Length: 280
Image (tube, rainbow, N blue to C red):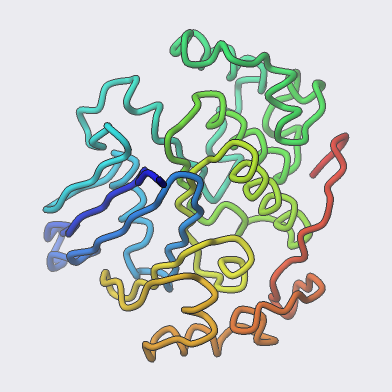
């Protein structure tokens, strides 16, 4: 029997009025679930509420009403260190999420000191190998590695803590198209080999079609449509979903057809094998 890892029940997030601006309802009575080993997509345009939802699930954002559960953990500002480790987040800008003054190896050692029992399952070399990085990356500073390598390091840091849920907030949008394909392939492999549950936040329906088992479509803080990814994207019921699909060049999000990566066309990247040494 499949267990439910993430439960978001009737969540509302209202940002209060400030500096002459009115109060803003970022998330309005949203319900989302994710089962063990499932990759669930949250899609929508900028301002749709998807990142506010992700930050609340991570225990880093405001919650006005509703309930969030990640396994036995109830995310929020008063989470214990152990509970916070169970929900890990990979951000859009990989370099911004790493301390520029710390080597990659030193950053991993710091995590191990904070969570000695949670991180003793693998050494640093083995950890980097799991995300396709060579051992020499341990001695480098963040500015000495590429964007793709930095995102792999961010994923490795999250994996080290053995999270119950991985939150990926636009993790490929700042990367070159060919590197995007490598990161998406890595996330799929982690789901398939480790049974990792992933909440994937994106505005790119072509990427969501490639990666996610189920999808929730958000507009103005509300979920307007949800279901199995192929069903939602091939036979959308809501006009907003159809509008998003029509904006994807080449129709790859709707049909699932694989197209060659292209900077100008913005089509879905092809998932190809990435070399371990010197991977971007």
